[in-house]
Image (cartoon, rainbow over all chains, first blue to last red):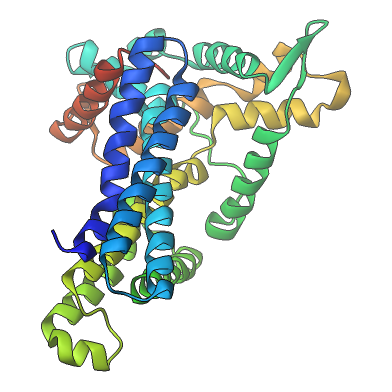
Length: 181
Length: 172
């Protein structure tokens, strides 16, 4: 294979290593989704760096070009890894996916009351609070919840800025019971 | 150096058009328009480079080799997917972020669960997502309820495959 193609395909090789290792580690450990994601991402990064370095060694391009291609590959792999992390998270936390799954499990059709019996705001609140406590983003003290780490709040502020920039609002529109959805 | 510069240029052009377009008029189908916006520039660039040929492409400082075109297209696809997946958090309020912000706003005294329940009703957390599913034609209104479409089933199948590979639970 020509060195240019070895370099071009390096982020895909890295991402494949990321996916395979993440699944294997998660299935072996059973309790550490975040750890499996970190291990998979690290291994994928190593594969991307190694394959790119091999391609660069074989190519006759200048050091500047090789450095630029190394940068492109690391940025590409980083973006692919970030996308993969959120894809896993989508199945874990996305409400739309959960609603679709409930409709599928009910045989392909559900009315609103049936859907809300299976999946509702109370369950979301319970699951999310438990997840935030587990990840130490919040802590429980004397029957009250207090902030444990500023990470999520920083994320919320950044997303709020993008919301204002793109959508010109801070919160999404509430769909009331009386409105047709 | 060309793939890096063209890759960044394509992402920057797409993002600038995205901001201008969104502030001018919010499109009906956000994800579809974002995909077109982010994928059109690299594919157009790669097409131009391959069509005008190596000699003219080099003269015009375009990409000269198919491998370079592939690098730019892959770079832009990766960024497009990463951005589109992040955009869903911009479009819809994440319950975890809403809860954390409310707890942070409560200060050192903290927030009671009853305060948080007020923020987390079905009108806030469930109904807007049903509206999204209807808009994206993943479900349709049918017989006073919601019926899943073929598109919705395909999406669920992909997610279920990934989750069964990992041996994970229901989520949500």
